[in-house]
Image (cartoon, rainbow over all chains, first blue to last red; front, top):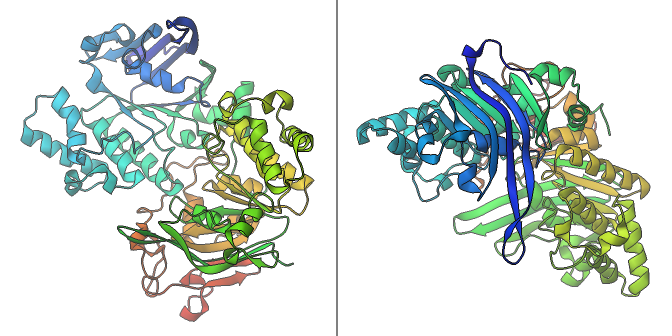
Length: 284
Length: 334
């Protein structure tokens, strides 16, 4: 894959990332085999850019996202991670893949996630204000009043009303909940946002609202996005570059329009051809 | 042409603690023999409840069909006894659902579940006869090695294979109408394409069979359906042949939906067009047009007066005051 010649612009650089999940079996469970979820992925993310990571279920796209925020070791017992995830922090480059949970903490505010399911990714027992405030309590030393002001500001940024802070997630629609999730991700002033299927659970008319909002926020705060999705039509609208994943590998990478107009790899072609078009003249 | 199925004035309400939810509130819809009719709408628009009402599968309580008639082969399905409606289900009208995982029984083999449908409706078709027909049907839906699959359990198959099994079960009795409720939503795009192709192929093979395809995906509708009905707020807002609907959408909601679609073809839009606001709470629908709260073109009569469904162009029906004679705005958009 391409490595940027001008590296000053690069904020995240994945080098030959490999993730293998152990499979346990037997009466006394022991590792009997393994699944190569990610099998040698290299990609670069530049400042202010959106990289779309597309592929079908099981291709490893979500695992790549989780590897970047370094939560795989917490999620899975004895997961095997190789390769480098170089994050270009102002104080110097650091390989996130080599960090333990304690060392990782310093970088967590910079790398935040937005999840697919706006129903299960918000704690139903916490008010919206408390949900958005939580990263601030963990990662900053702001006072209560400062945090409250910031929560109100964040809610306005995602086009919710500051009055919503005292309500609970169930009082909101899917699109509004996704905005809450975005506000929470932005709380710590991140540099990189990894969005894992952020609009897949939303209705068509709401999808467009959330995508536009994400683009506005990117411009305002200079965010870099890794946008993980199975929906090629959505990705086209937000990504500058696209990586097509298949069986744990990136089979094709390039500028978004290039991939849509002239896909090279047979799998990209198949994937693209299978996407239904809203055009009644193109019948099955 | 006499319709295969006629829905007239269907109202299905849910009686919940927080009030009456009028999920379906006055739906009129015809399904013609041999056609693929798309029923599109966002979550909460009432499209699934309409489908469940046809086979009287609405969970009661809290749901109840409070009014309407559904005519099928000279009989009102809503007036049939439970015994009679059971004979219609699966034999004359079949249904497949979104989740191929949860709609198959995990403790029975595939063969068992396909054969169950046959034996249920034709008690005489025992043992070998049912088995042979099940095998043949599995072959028809493109299941490799049907002999082996018969002995397997649902968890041993992929999502696409499970949806094929569902289709096999639904079609083994050769029903006149297949209702498919978001049949490909849970599947990957390449598998989605296979399943849609399979459904259309089977329809041509068993002629006169009609399909009611319920989906939120307008692109799927464009590629597979002959006619489309757009639902919003428990009512049909627009019905038209598929080409007319995509070329000349009349209802502001339909236009908004089409404009907000991200596309893989054509020039890329810098920004997606959006429909402002959100789908209104089903307990608090406006008394007039259900789309009033989000409509960019609303005017005086909209909030208070429900527009009628009128045939604005041949076979193209729309429920909107912009296209309703009585308010003098007729032709504003022609």
